[in-house]
Image (cartoon, rainbow, N blue to C red):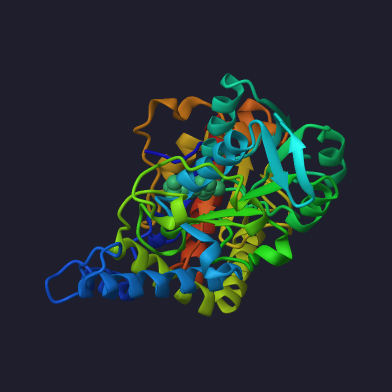
Length: 399
Ligand SMILES: *Cc1c(COP(=O)(O)O)cnc(C)c1O
């Protein structure tokens, strides 16, 4: 099944399907066996305390990657839950009155987000609309960027929260979050950032970005699936209402026994990603340039998303007049590619590409290349040769 329709995914990296790093897997296993740290971190016995120490070590590792205090990080089951907790939690928690940085205000029932956000943000916003909240959906420019002036114009007296992602999962476009934060903070509006695609790939420091809430997830940075985190600034902590009650874990913000094995894996994945952030970012940028350089001169080839404001590792390209499905079918020698079509809603053109002004046809003729730790220059060259050949063959065969 595809995670989104932003062009057919072509993985030039095994890790786009994210097997965990071997060191991460080893650490996780240690927390599952009788010889290891299998205690419940909420328990007071010696096993519990050992587990708790590992959980808190991992919290420090994850916090270091985004530059926050460990106690400002709440464990979740992934970015979907982080996004839901942030958006539903602030909106519902602020019903009645809200405590912002400049005191208590009357109920604020308006939120602002963008049409290009991940479904876990958009669907949470839809749920709030059914509860009586009003949401404004900003349209990005043709490069996929949200303009800070357009955001300022959308803010109202009763705006409570703005939710804008750092990097887009379909196009890789990286927003200027610091500029967006400046606008929000002029008006005491809470800023939530979905950083699932940027943390571990580019610097994502909460203070530099100015985010009040920021979510990320382990499986996008070579950690395990099913574990994520939400940074909650101390200014908004008292407003945030939990989604899950019970047990008092995570300072009452997220009940439930902590999955120690998932958490230690996430922590280690964060430390490893932080250690190679600069070098790997540089390497992937160069590989991405090599890929785009090899395709750009083909007639009717369009890069989706801003040319430079982007995370390395995602390249979304439309090939005018060529069906994405047919194109992929011909790319047989790309051993690392995968683009199963098991999902019936794949016929829907990408709402993200449509929001960038691409017509239905162009949106359906796009490929989304994912590059990662295992991608080497020869994979790029193979992809360039194969894509060029297939685009030309399909165009020649077209009536
Ligand atoms: C993958 C992703 C999510 C969802 O993350 P899960 O951990 O799978 O719930 C949310 N937002 C963005 C931008 C993503 O890329």
